[in-house]
Length: 85
Image (cartoon, rainbow, N blue to C red; front, side):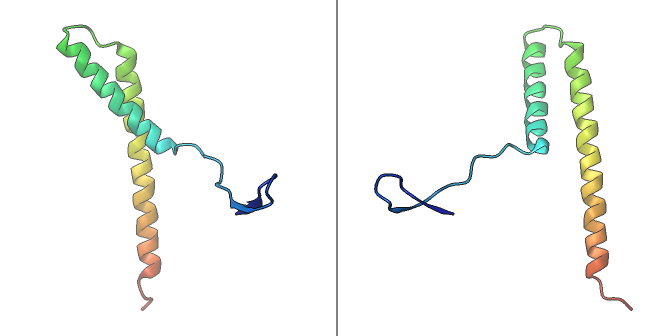
């Protein structure tokens, strides 16, 4: 993508705007942070908030569902690639 500089009229290359982090990535990071924080609480002999366990369980369930969907998608692609007999 190109555009002209407003003062010099030189051609400049413009970058696309920054998008957002994919949901699967930020959920993975969030799960990792919850695990690390839980470990710090356990090490400090403090009770880990129950809400953290609920959130970790929810994130793990969602990630398993995504993995199942990706596996089914991959299987369907493999079926399409195999020659018909």
